[in-house]
Each structure stands twice: as C-alpha cells, then as structure tokens.
Length: 60
Image 1 (spheres, rainbow, N blue to C red):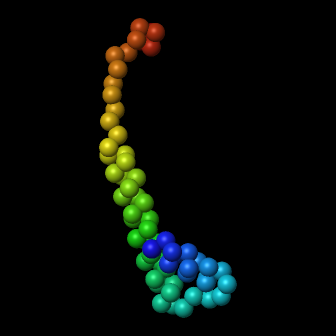
Image 2 (tube, rainbow, N blue to C red):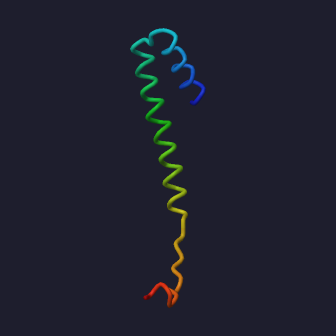
Image 3 (tube, rainbow, N blue to C red):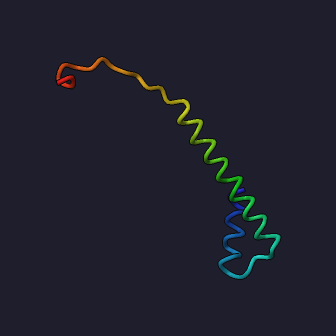
C-alpha cells in the first residue's frame, strides 16, 4: 500500500495524475489513515492506569 502511495505521489510531482489515479490515491490515503488510527487506538486501549495512594506532601 505504501509503495503505491509513494508511486502516485512521485507521479503527481513529476506530471499529472489521471482522474482514476487521483481517486485511487484518495482511497489509499483513507485506508492508510484508518490503519494508523486503528493501531493508535489499540495502543491507547491497552494502557492501564494505576492510581497510587497520595502522599502527605501532595495532599497539602
């Protein structure tokens, strides 16, 4: 997926993308971002918070 995204980005810099390529690029970007968001959500969901007893210094 990333290879194709890079290929289309290079072609866009060097010339003009066809309407089909523009649509493909847009869909690839959406899929890529969805994957990144999913990975981030999975990481955040696996975080455990541990509450410690407050110390006397923090209570005052």
